[in-house]
Length: 365
Image (cartoon, rainbow, N blue to C red; front, top):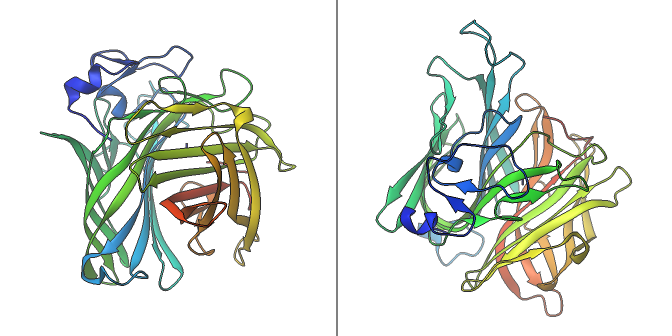
């Protein structure tokens, strides 16, 4: 959960300042500075660069089942050591990486994870722009004549990705110009940038087989000083690339009894102004569940979502998309390829990802 123009155009967008502006903690009235805020915010406790998307194998264009979902995330977390600790080995910052592939035909999710303390050329997150490294995994942003693109390279023994993800739309500043409220108190907030409709091409590797793929992806970059408000145990979130070129975001933070502590999101049409949703304008109703045999987590894998955009249903492509990352980040969460449909006739409006946390125990990282 928490589009592109050339850099000069980005600097002219409301709420975006010159690239030399200083990084700051998320607060109402904050100003996003690009490309600086594409980079790391080490003064904040937690941060992530999170990309999800839907891919189709180029050789199987006519086979509707030959599709894959992918998630790659780099987390940066403030470590236990003080920033001025004199030892080069002190854990001032930790970098965690997650890679997951959803195989729709096989209804199987496979994932890999890594973690390392920052330093020694092993792990790093640059300040000036997106440039994250974790061993041989990397995510790099670079300008292009039409805007910019991300280069992602992640590989493990069984799965891997090599992708170019090109901007097609401006950066989407979530909330109030990038200040995204997450609870009743103003300090329960994050800095939050999204990049919907990333045109994606490259290769997917499964068990040594290299597949040419293409599709659309969604990037979230978020940073904050608290993972959750004190009264929340987890969240439900979706980011959907609409087939008409628009972008739909909806999320809620849940109390232990399942009720909504806070909700938010936005709709940006392909052409036109972004509509930011107020907490009272969203309602999530579960329609179907999947239970994990590994963790006991019971996840709603189909939802009715009521928002100012209308009433829709969000359906996971399959249930078994839980990611157990207790060996790296300490979290267990459900992260899966899903489709957004009209509630009245079931017509598919777009594809994206549903993320749910706190169903296999309170979320912690």
